[in-house]
Length: 51
Image (cartoon, rainbow, N blue to C red; front, side, top):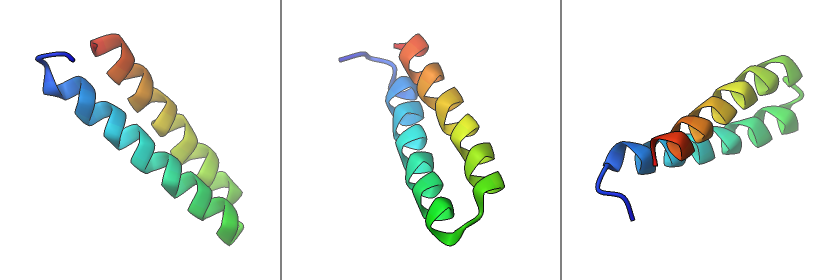
């Protein structure tokens, strides 16, 4: 595991946002789900690259 906790936090934030995407899709808010999905993808990408 990495000594940099920022990567682990970014991965957690990305997974948390994916939960929000699922929630927004269930509520029928597709635009917000897409925006949150982009944020989740960016957070997970940042976590992977920071690793």
